[in-house]
Length: 305
Image (cartoon, rainbow, N blue to C red; front, top):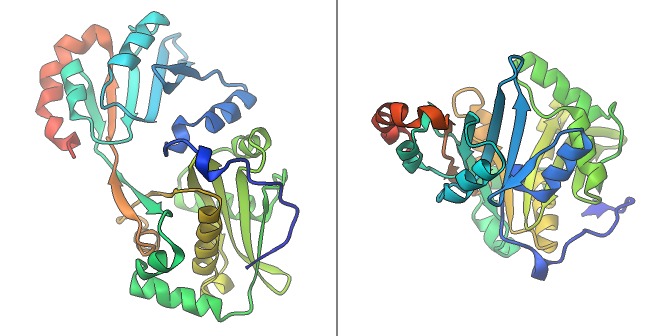
């Protein structure tokens, strides 16, 4: 379905891929951060970001980590002189037991949409919601040209420009373009740009980052004309189908926001993706752990699965 464009071989084989892990805990993300001058740490098998605040206080952050057993992380932090450093913990799954350490809930858990790509194409198509399947059929009936390529090293690419305008209009911030380009540069063949064209005009694009056996839906944009042609639906379906042939078992479609982005939430869940509850955000400062433990336990139920 995709036109042939310069595209080095996909870097992993299905038989050698590790278990799925979030992008924020992947070696690929670590390499991109280091290329941008950051100094992430691997402690207790987890990626830890750390920075100095203006007052000289250090802060450590752990995002989308498996914290079912936080003991290895806490021990590793102490070994590296970070035992008394304030922590921001955002587990990949509910971890109400963090309250026993004195961690205080800061943000209640959100949900991510995870699309299982291990089923055969017929099963994946059957699992689509009816409206999503109808849009896919509509997109397949259009005269669209689809392409796949490695992300060009071009800060002026139209997808970046469109995404920057959307971030400005909606008042949110995503990855800096430099970090996205670093990911592509440091992980050859693992930042895939999928585009749909009507004639010579691009009408939709999706940038997907792969990491091990998992892929993440990173940036996407559809023009007004692309929406009329169901280009985004067709492009995502074909991209997922291609990823499945390369042994990718799961596509992380990102957070679900039914309040501010209900249409996008319906689009993601229309694929048949499952809702995965994250663990929220916790604050932990070991010197105050015992003092804050009663307060943390009071709010524990808000962070449970």
